Length: 404
Image (tube, rainbow, N blue to C red; front, side, top):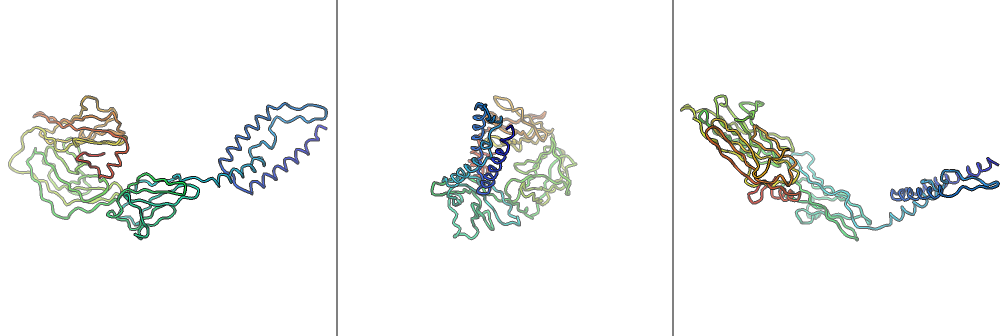
């Protein structure tokens, strides 16, 4: 009698596998249904282990493992999952975003000539989509350049004049609508310098000088460097020479004979990596004597008010002309300069990474040499993220206050 139960168990397993195959072929299983099956299985397994084992004449002893019907992939559970799946498929709900549009910087010299603003949402019934540019709804019929593919807005032959601005996607069905966050579409370009010949600059030895870059139209930011006499011989920055990444100008605090030559401003677009060179500016020395010592004069400095979004890196510039070459120092009024701050370019730049609210305050740079000293103070205010949207919309300027 000890082996009489084996054929019965084998038939039960075969029957269960048949039901299992039929259920799998009938319908795929939703993730939520599988989770419920797992919970049901755990509960069933615990109950089976808590039941007493049966004893008696000719009776069978139940095994220690749960019966086949309580297994997570049993035929009964799979058939039950079909109903769960059908229930989820028939459930109706309003739109929920899966993908919202992101900011886009589109190179005007791109060979692609198409801008894609992405948007995707789920809902039942499936949502329909519409788009807004600077608050006005896009009408496909009114402009052939606009087209909608699924939820994405395709802009053909995009131009800065007509297409720059804020974009929002709206998804809606009969249960409601949702409006996406703002996405800013900008255009990257770098025009050429004017071909007009630049006049020469003549100074005395020991005198300070500023060579103007006057960059061409561009978007977004550009990086400045200067070429001395011929490419690729670049001006090396030190305590005597400074290139401002705010103005693009080259500052030489104290000119010496080795500085005589031709200077060319080179600008590079940070998105497209395009580069253009300015016409040369000749620098010569006057022959009527050497400039004597004089006290420092701060020639370039950060704005009096700087508004910075929390988490960005802030760069404060300060450089002075003078003879002897001035020394630049920094301090925070009524506080300490953050330990994470770094001094760059012979202390002409104070760089504060990952700026936080408690980094706000009044910062001062001081230029000193044996002939005297001078200083400049400015207020740094740190705000949370939403101010960055204002900065983008206003091109980085708001009432004379620089936004970072």
